[in-house]
Length: 186
Image (tube, rainbow, N blue to C red; front, side):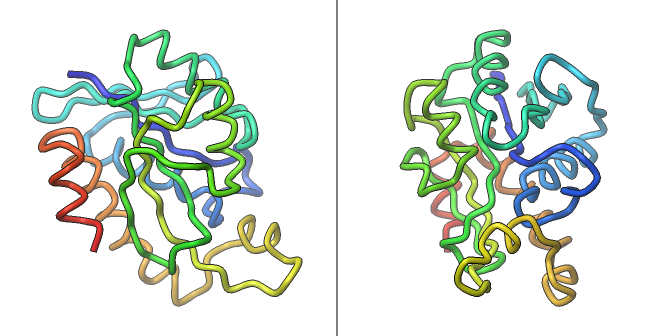
């Protein structure tokens, strides 16, 4: 069994460890946890790691968030991975900070990375791990909020939440989405 795990984010030092880049941070921790390394590939950084007889291809698109679909489409075709074996790691304003929610399909909810994947890959039938970043921003300040760093209190909690996200991914690829949703969507 092989899987495509896609961490969404923006490349560049100015975006590192921002709310919008939590997908990159989770992907980094997953690859580190499984003893792998990222290499530059076509349209993305790519790592191949193994876990319990599964092959996980972890990518971080280099296309910037709004064009993530190009990278996802390329790697799905390149690796011959079907949509049910794709898991996208994404930030979510609609969830309170730290809330994790696995969904098997659904709308982009206004997220430009998910919109791009839907447009280029032809639909919403792929799983996503939605990582809640909250919505603690003043009216008209959404862009500054998502492109901003987590506050000090959030930063203290991030290591535990990222570790829990990695556990969710491992569960998704081994025991499947249904039981993973039961165990983690609390």
